[in-house]
Length: 499
Image 1: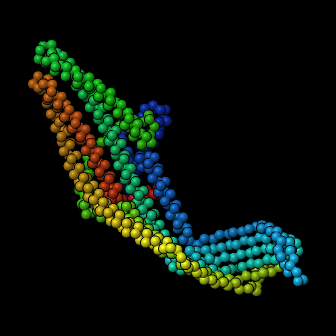
Image 2 (image 1 turned 45 degrees about the vertical axis):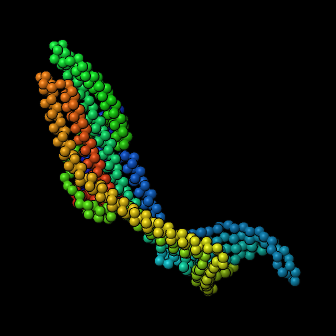
Image 3 (image 1 turned 30 degrees about the vertical axis):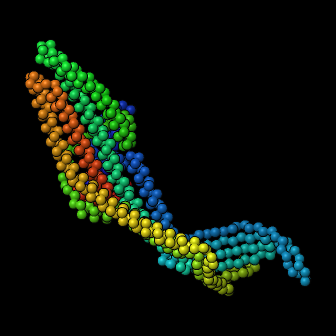
């Protein structure tokens, strides 16, 4: 927690410097030296990808909140303030059927408290109701009330969606939290790529400028030697061609640098007048990852594992749903309460009350469905077998991916060291070859070869650094575990979500 707090303080200072610099410079060029860690922190704070990930998580959060609300008692008020009805009905009066017009004005209000029972799928409710009825022909007014009534509706043998949702929804929410944290690690990897792409563009520009300077010097020396006959014309032409190519490469390097700066500015949410200059990591963490531990952490933290579990539960749910809708519909409904009817409003809620008791058993049995429901159950079972096979294969692929990522990461540390040493050796070799050329001990071909080796070694070293840090964040993304610090990244999740 202290490490996160210090990082955020440093990040706020960097952003504040940028903001005040913008205000003072009024769109003048702002140069900003930035490390990889700072770039990642800024990406977390203000990149569009971070913004999307946060709101994707929030959408899943409110979806889960809605599910939890469904499990709580719900209190509701429903009312029909005015209901006018004009009809003509037949009545038997004095031995004759007579059509009698009737005009009524009614109103009602109901207060209802209900609760779903997850274990059984039942619904329990407690409600109170008031009604007023006025006959507009006679002027008679009557009132009725149900002070309290308790009811229950219990399906028997049907599909209990509350039970299955109680198994699936918490898993979905946990998966959403892990996916948010995993998305941040993926964001770290993408930030690493744009950061090193800019670093490579800066280095390529430096190489191009150095090569142009060297090519210019060597071309001028070559012209002098050509005049005294120690350099042949084809060697002089080769030096001139190198000089022209160096000019072309410098122009191309400048364009590539502007493109890389534009990309990282867009990615991090900066204006175009901000010129970021990369400070490359001076070292890399030196540790190895044990495959067994990485696999254990992946199974413990990776959201894909929760998705495997969800798919199996969903398959069982579909079988239960197919069986629950097989045509046999049995249910019990019951109510117990009190009511009262009166012509006097003052007595509508006074004793005595009449008992209101109802109990019903509903039964629906299919006669002929031509095997439709049986086919639905068999199809659901077949889908479950397919899902089980897919999950087994997905777990194999999952473990294989962890294995490959661990092996690649563990090898990359050595690759960085080799690349760094090769860069140093190539630079020293070029300086020796250059000095020998100046004293006319080697020809142009060997000099060009040495220069190309220096350029290739420098680019290879930067690429090895980029690959290392990309692999580093990829391992963190898969396992959600900080192997360098020896702790789960889940511990940082609550702090990230609060911010």
